Every structure is written in C-alpha cells, then in structure tokens.
Length: 306
Image 1 (cartoon, rainbow, N blue to C red):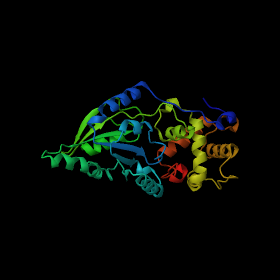
Image 2: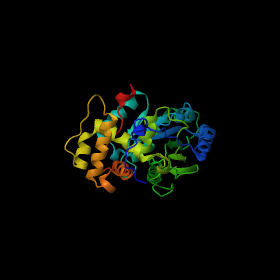
Image 3: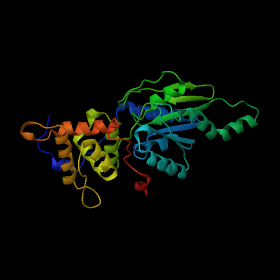
Image 4: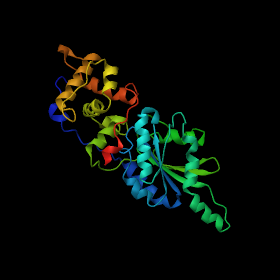
C-alpha cells in the first residue's frame, strides 16, 4: 500500500529486525555436535558488509578450530575497501581471502588454503606412520551469502540448491571436493538478537533476511543515509541529481527524506496529487543496490570497528 506522508516518527528510530526460525536453532545444535569431526571452519561473509555479516555464534561453534575467512560477492563490493578488510582480518590472525563464487575467481585456491591450516595436524599424524585423511571443513555463513554457489563451484557439479533469497539450504550434508577435502554444508544461520540495530538493517539491505519480514522504507532510508556519506557520486549519477549535500557529520533525517523524495520524483514513483509513493521508491532503491545499478558498494569500513 502506498504511503503519501512519510512516517517521520518511524524513520528516525529504525525498527529492530530479528529473524531466527526454528531450522537455524536446529542447525546450530547439529554443528556443535559435529565440530569434533572438523579440521577447519570456513566462514563465508558478504564483502559488502564483512563485519556485520559475521555471525558471533560461530566463535562458540568453531571453538579452537583453525578459521578460514572468505569474503564473497567481491564483484558487488568496493575493491579498495575489500583489500582493507582482508588486511584487517589478517591482522586479527585469520587466514582471510576474497573470492567471487559466481565466476569462480579465487575459489580454486580454497582447498590449498585449508590444506595450509591443517599442515601441523597432518604432520603429526604422518610422523606416527599413518596416512593423513582428506581435510574436513565446515562451511558456514549467514543466509544468502553465496554458500551454495561456492560449494557447487568447489565440487564442480550442482550439489547444493541455489537461491537469491535466504533460507534455501535446510539441512546438513557432506560433500567431496576432489581427493583432498570434504565439506560439511550447513544452513545459513543468523543469531537471536542484533545488539546493534544497524547490523540488522545492513543484513536486510543485502538480502540476508527475508523481504517479507522487513520494512522496506526503514531499510531504504538507512541505505540512503550510508550512501549519502560514502558514495554521493553514485547517487548523483544513477538518479540524475545535481547535488547530494547535508550539514554536520552525517545526514539528518529531514535531509535523507528530501533525497528520498527527489529519487521518487526522478523515477516516477508518484501517486495522486503528485505525492511520492514511498513503498515503490523504497523497493527501487533496495533493488538497485542489490543488483549493482548503483555500482560496487561497501557499507562499512574497518575504521568503524575501532
């Protein structure tokens, strides 16, 4: 339903987004049960939100297992910031790398990266006169991060069901990757409560949360706020705007709404009386962000974690 008066009481205080269906709780329990069988945990994150797409529950699940951190969807992210995030995670002690599961760029090295992390364990086994088995890796990540696409790429055949929406993978399965690695696939899991509401908004913007469960207007307004600061040129170019400006350190809600109005008018999202159709405008902004119509964008930087 179209809204002809922007709900200003709402956009200034974004709704808290939560999503933790039953299959996620079950998946977490199963992963904890099977972690003793695992040599390496492959954690897949979204290169557009590398920090916000890291599930804090993984630290509990992974225990003391070696961690390979993979930034996926690099084709959609700001290349300079992706490089900064890789360095950030390496400084934290992770084996961190960027891949594009869609094209396969970088994915051909994953078995090698896992093998490097199991070297000490393998040498210990072989020193006792035994032959080391194939590496066993648990691959884990939030919904819609590209996990199924990556698994199919690694296995060189279609095994995992692929979808452009969260919640496609429902169960666990072992998958052989050549002769050197076995992968345990798991459903994408979120965590019960987002302590920072902006994390929920970033996850919603990138498609990690089912669209039926989010308020598009809240998400679009937050997204525009971030883009006004980080990528004003992208907004100007895409929507044919003369200027993107705001006073102070960050845009005020009135300035974001003014931009929202300008985009709605430029793209013909209007209803009777020339009023802006905020539902259509919100969906437009989110869809064009997700489909790279606005360019390669990253919504957070390492400096924000300091």
